[in-house]
Image (cartoon, rainbow, N blue to C red; front, side, top):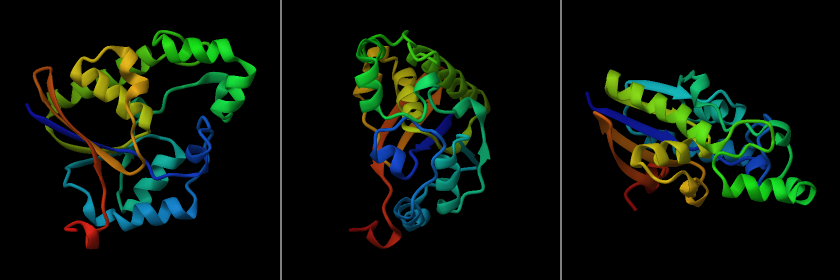
Length: 195
């Protein structure tokens, strides 16, 4: 069966702007307004899902989606680094950060490695091909990166080289273990969609 999976990255909030490992911060007012402005531009889907994070759930609400939270779509678990900024962690643990960014199997923070995340997200994607249909999911940027790495069979080292802007679409179409990618499509407010 063919599965069409549209992944939407959440709206920006303070944690994203500060390069802070998510610690449950909600969206700010600008993020809510940005998501609400593009609510009419979403592609159709039979199933709406979300990562369980506050930022993703609030983005769904602002987009007008009644989405079911799926634990398998949760963000990369960064263990003891959660809530800290990359700058803070880099100053306190420079070797650990360098190892983490260079080795997809490393998890010096005590959480999940990039390889483990890609495996988890890849398994979720493959389940979609068994079910088929159109799925729209609001997920953290790390989950989008992991999905692209898995779908295209990219080396795991490419994970950190994929940029995922807030409120962007990444579309994967797959069947029988083969995926096609349309990435980085920005969501646009309905009145500017034709501009």
